[in-house]
Length: 243
Ligand code: NAP
Image 1 (cartoon, rainbow, N blue to C red):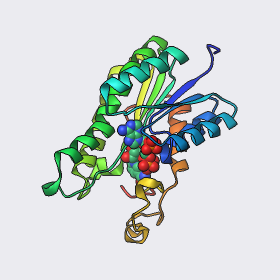
Image 2: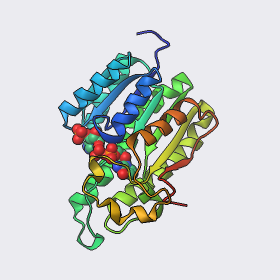
Image 3: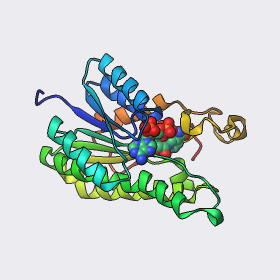
């Protein structure tokens, strides 16, 4: 592999927003490593689409909320690719329920998958980026991490946690040439939102429609490629939902 080849890692890249980010970065010339939890067919399809862009694609199955699995997989990825230029901490789940009825399992699954994952995955990547003295980390937060949402105490806490994580890493790593930003998507059409009744909430969105995964992916590409003096920010991509 040429020393100049840029490498991107996208967690949860088999479907939805993660797949769109992987394809956008492939089109920008990055070799793209995606991660997924279990949907092998979708992951394989994403890899095929990445390679159709003329770059290298590869999928690694591991649970981003499992510290040991992440450490083993990231060591393999870093050994094989030698560098990481862009990390998108995107993998996420919901396990909704009113707080009064929220189980330990619901809380732990969402906090581990959506928040602890960013710590586990970023840790080895930051070490590589510090040696490179360059890199961009983009954390997939949510409007819910900014304004809360009944029925999502676990998800809101994890997504708000990602914002604090983003701002802190930006302060610690800026002098090393590493930029760290978060995106707060609004309602985006993916498997995660497929059961929502769009007509119930579009009235509250100034743009009166849901967003597309590609809207988030284009923002990721901008933050990775062009946002050279942007760090520690939370970019809302929500059709004006949070103003
Ligand atoms: P999605 O369509 O449900 O896709 C989720 C992705 O995460 C899949 O690739 C899935 O892999 C992967 N994943 C889930 N749990 C994992 C685990 N434990 N380890 C590794 N990978 C795991 O979700 P999405 O809508 O694209 O959401 C992507 C991110 O954006 C999430 O962090 C979500 O919270 C955030 N977000 C979404 C919206 C929205 O409206 N859609 C709004 C705000 C924020 P498999 O395919 O193998 O299951």
